[in-house]
Image (cartoon, rainbow, N blue to C red; front, side, top):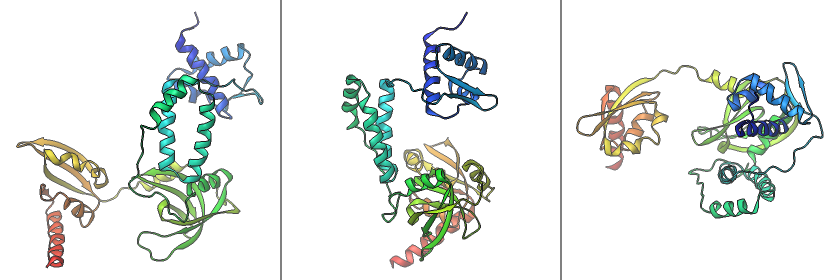
Length: 321
């Protein structure tokens, strides 16, 4: 007997929507999304075909809708409506102005097909959600960085990049073939092939002084972004660090602890927390961070870290005299 439960009906409708959202959809992609077997997906596809949906398939490639077939206007659930609000706020604060404007335009179109009750739902809560950024993610001289990077990647056209590293005084100019964009450590980055360095490099968007499209085509067929990021994750020498902090201030450390190699923590006697790190830099990075709460904390190991903290304290003392 066929499974005619509401769950199956919802899945079949979702499959139809996904088929319209992409040029080709693989059966395994659908099975992964709905956490079911390939056999179930094949059966659902046959059900859609039997109901008159024009689907064609290619062995080893996937499924697609015939050109010209379109679904009627889609109705959204309230949970989906709520997700739009968060997405809109994120786009306003965490992307460049160009992408933010495009998303705002798309949101007007989405709102236009909502039921009146859902529009009221949206209106009641959208003004109660606020996203804030601590630092600018884009340089004022290149405000539409992400939009240009997306165009470059899609069209496979090189960009002319003006870039200034944190240590450099001068701006360098180079032709880049962008591979992909990613967000990490509260900043936007992109990875690309640099013709100046003849190698792949990462660039932070807030350090980009200027970015322009060119008519030069990519000279290399690049692999996926994940491939190159995995290659950069080579082993780096670290040093084990153990510190002791009062339980009452332990929560303040968690905001940056992952950047300093946080591994684990355990509660010891007298409401003290022993924290373990594998630090990449016990000469400058970790000592400077430690001094932010050094009047509460104690270094258990290594001795070299204690010496480096004392050096910084001595330098500060001399400057204050």
